[in-house]
Amino acid sequence: MKYLIYLLLLACICNAQQYKNYTKVTAYRLANTDEIGPCNILNYAKRLKRTGHYIQAMESYSDTLAYNLIKLKQESQVWKKDTCTCGQEAVGKTALVPNMFIVEVNTHKDTIFTTSGHKAVYSVSEQAYYTAPENYITSLFPKDVAGFFKRDFISEIKAWKVDSISSAAITLHKKSFYGLNRKQFEKDIEFFHVVTTDTMYLDIGKPMKIDKLYSIDNMQFSFDEDSGKLSKVTTNTYSNNHTPMSMLNVDGIKIGDSEEVLCSKYDNSTSLQYWDAPLSAITNYYTYEVNLSNNEGLIRYVVRNAVIREIEIHFSYPEKKEKKIAGKKKKR
Image (cartoon, rainbow, N blue to C red; front, side, top):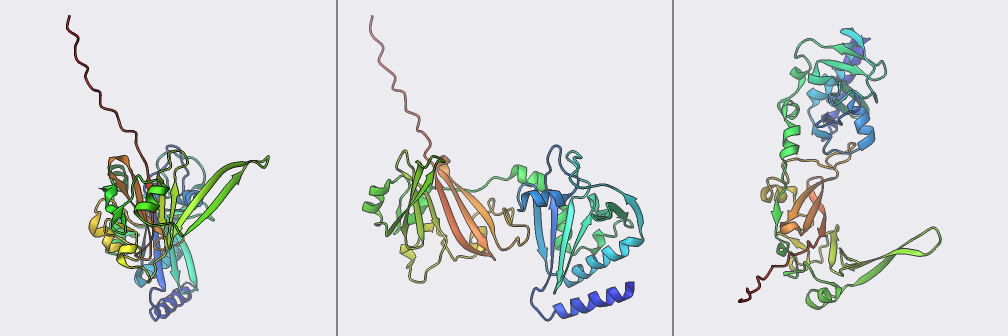
């Protein structure tokens, strides 16, 4: 029976080679943990559902890796078994099961958990782990997967500093618009095409807050209710009708540009890939952030399948300290 399973898996792998990227392994690992947190990465994944400070992930399309991981789960059944309740139980900063692999081969899908250091295969259903021969599990990893598990994400995330650019580098019609109110924007940049109103109500039926969203083609603008200054800009649709001058330009970057454009400009901001991505499809949605100098805000780039699909800009206006003018000393 065991050999029949291997033959069926091998047939799946061979069949998958006929289809591009139909075999996929997504590897997950805990980068950081709570001071008193769950024992298993699965519980973090259920709670967070996204990559970031706690969970880092990568994808591999290696047929060999996919086959070896599925085979690993089967052959681990003959190894030394130890009972270990490992789920939501709080265990402190060191999770006992920090690694997870989701393997997809055609219609077959499986999940494999390994303990710290990949010393054993953990079974969630049995609440037990099967100890592998020394270095056996890591010997199955190709170079990129091995490198992923060797990275010191704790230090990388702690030392992570995003890049910064000037707010003057954000332009429309080759004009900067940081700090403008609505009337100034329409006078200096362009008239808004559409204005929509979103009203939030209290339980008693009285309006609590009225938000106005101003639009120009594929761009949406919001203004701060108190200061009247521009607070947020979002663009998320590429239009062939736009000329380069009529598109929102952020330091030379526009909607539809490749992820490589970001990587070539911002080494620091792009050093951690697949940030804030859904765990179910880490390459389908993830973000990069770039700060605006002098605490004037931040830019968030949303990337889907290696292409910039959305740019979101948040402006802030820190209070400027007034310079003290020294008074003249009175003569006595």
